[in-house]
Length: 426
Ligand SMILES: C[S@@+](CC[C@H](N)C(=O)[O-])C[C@H]1O[C@@H](n2cnc3c(N)ncnc32)[C@H](O)[C@@H]1O
Image 1 (cartoon, rainbow, N blue to C red):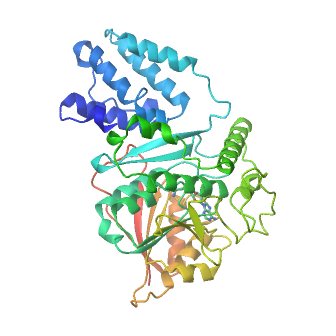
Image 2 (cartoon, rainbow, N blue to C red):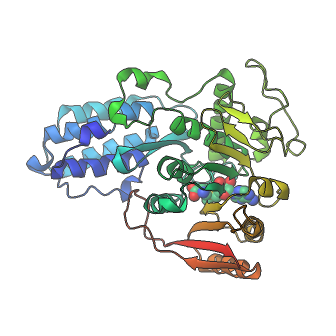
């Protein structure tokens, strides 16, 4: 991506803005087209071709495609803008539009890639659901507070450097992956309660932490055709098909399916299934403590508490449900820093979330200090926020509000306030 838009001219900067928004899948109606006037020579045929080759027809789009619907809307909107300004539209724009309309929509086009561009043209590509809430969870897409906390982490990397970190309700992993890439923690443990979230999270971590940490500029055509979805065995393929099917079912019915449908994916039998065997039907409750990923990339600790990335033993995943957790896991892992983003939205789970925070923040570390938590919340409802603050007080937890990050890296909706709290035990 950077190859197509690097440079310092105004046109290149505008193009960069458009391209980064496209790959983050910023809703078309909210997309800022900068000062592109779409008139006359401002966006003439050459510039139009540049927009296409940096977005829809780029190698990055082939490798990590935004949803087909989004791509269609993007080209349609682009064409519409050009036509309404009576600009001369180059043939390529019509060709790409017609090609993309003719592309057959996958029956289960429910997952897509969002690519977040970071400083120095690094990118994080995440596989996400096209819907904000599916399968009874909010964890299958990346929320504003995760992006905000990631921005803050880059500016305050010393908070995380050489620290053992645990993330609560991590969702698909953007904040944690950014911290691992920019802040050199000694260990980062991603936790969530939802099986599908944990599965996609594991794939996203593999995608971003096992591959070469080069910018897309350096990708050769050969790289691009290697492993588009990072699926490493037949079992993975089967799981992905199942997730897609369930997501499309739940989108069609507009209901949240019983999430136990998919739970066998993450909770493994004691030996992994053979590649050809069916995914085993297990009682999720029986297997509750036995979280393991069906992937050669992860190894499980002897007590089944945590799965660690084999090629990078500083990264692990654990299943942690605030409403039903094992104290011994918290004491055993003993994080120095706890983070969480967009986890304060459901008043019914606030007491259990705060209880987990209380337990974690009360542990005395080897150096005699206490851990610190950083919680970023989108303040959608004042009442929910007030209840969270009240519950922190009830648990004798101290909080202070921190300054927002200075630099806007991502393109999330900044109209709704995001509050970042530093929380400690009194
Ligand atoms: C709004 S999403 C935020 C995800 C991610 N942190 C982000 O900001 O993109 C809330 C996350 O909290 C997780 N969650 C909800 N209830 C939970 C519980 N009781 N225990 C653990 N995680 C929970 C969900 O699975 C989901 O991933």
